[in-house]
Image 1 (cartoon, one colour):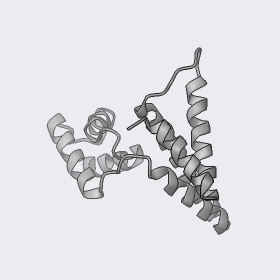
Image 2 (cartoon, helix red, strand yellow):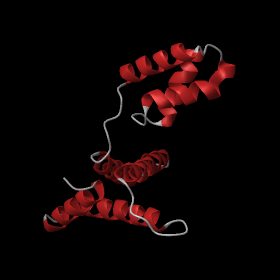
Image 3 (cartoon, helix red, strand yellow):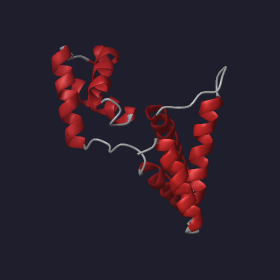
Image 4 (cartoon, one colour):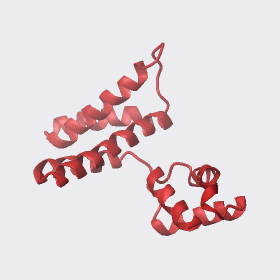
Length: 150
């Protein structure tokens, strides 16, 4: 199997042939973000799959935030569109941890590090993020660490 970027390109071609407008526009946007990341910095370079996943995570987060903003401003059509785009991007991201799994990992990380007070939030977050290893958003991890340290 090829790289994640190859898969995105292949799925874009398939969506274009099938005249799937939502998937086509979403994958074009995602590939544009990947290309921008590749040429950012002093010299262009090919992104690894992990770096492509990081770009896609940022794009998915943008869609969630935009959806929330549109919903808060009484624009349900745009909110639904952003949510649908986020769901297309989510297909290319690793599965997120369930709340129960996240709680268990954070509990183990805090116990192993001996973190018990809110004043230890920084080091506790570092340990929790290492245990979670990108399988949950930082906000969810931070909320769980805060809850357990309270």
